[in-house]
Length: 462
Picture 1 (cartoon, rainbow, N blue to C red):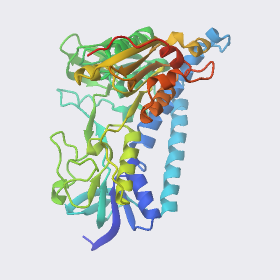
Picture 2 (cartoon, one colour; picture 1 turned 180 degrees about the horizontal axis):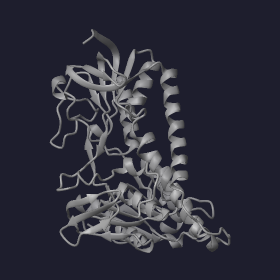
Picture 3 (cartoon, rainbow, N blue to C red; picture 1 turned 180 degrees about the vertical axis):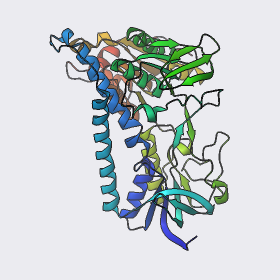
């Protein structure tokens, strides 16, 4: 092993938080190395958020093309070219990779492609991707290790070679019958997209509803969407194993009737990338679930070592990882920023979107928070009539004893943008009455807030 190379800043992993931390430290004059195993820029621009939304949008265009006559457009027969879908996505990903490399060059951060393994405090051996090895230490070390798709240990499942989102998002062919294990974000988004491209799709979910973290009425509305798009759903179904081969014929065994299809997608959660890299040699402790143990400033149990993003147990969204970067960056400059009490928005990119910020009814009841409720069908928002997209609903929770907005859920057209408007009001601690008195442009989806808030909230719930 060569002599140890010393850096001011050593970042392991080039995901959202890691790359921004590396670029920032280097641009401020710190000698900085960023070690990345494979994906320059992390999962988001390569195999996750952005590629999936790219493909989901192609599926939406395919759906709209199939509805062309509804809008008075004669489009003729509509078919799907998965090669064309993938060409568009790959062109985007290639462009994003070039942008990342440009940022590394401009910042002065050294990008090292290889696999890092700790040998001691703040010191790693890096097996370089192009051969050879380097030993690197950092005065300060930042971990951005990410997560990977969980693969349950079930009889025959590994032998069936199922896809995760990574393989599905790179598929140049259209599955005849896709079976989806999991009714969460990844499973539902990709199930709808593949159905719209022309696959037959069946979703298997162990819980009592799709979108398990959402209120039952919201989950039911998602279920109605899937039923109307002819997507099969099996709830309260436990997978016990698999037979056959994904990509040919695969049979998913359950505690009820088996499901037979041509392809299998496993989307049942995420596993932190914390095993097998020697964290214990660096004094970095893990939680029982395998995430890196951090405090509210994202400091680990090791001196001058921080962890950011999903490996630190942060909510699994790119926007949260970016905020983790800001927490660490600001504190390095003498700030006191923490992860406590963050208002974290989420969006499931179905068509229409499902977006939420703050509490929903399920969470409020679990936490015994008193609330008042306002609801509105999206069909009452006039903009949806112009779009022929009336599906969905709006829900706002108001504190039982004040006019504070506790949470907002939107399932419908442009839900993510509408949620952002409410989030700003919540960040500013504006009462819901301030939104109620606002003048919103007509006809926009945001105008629906006027209608939603036009009546008093219903009696307090507990």
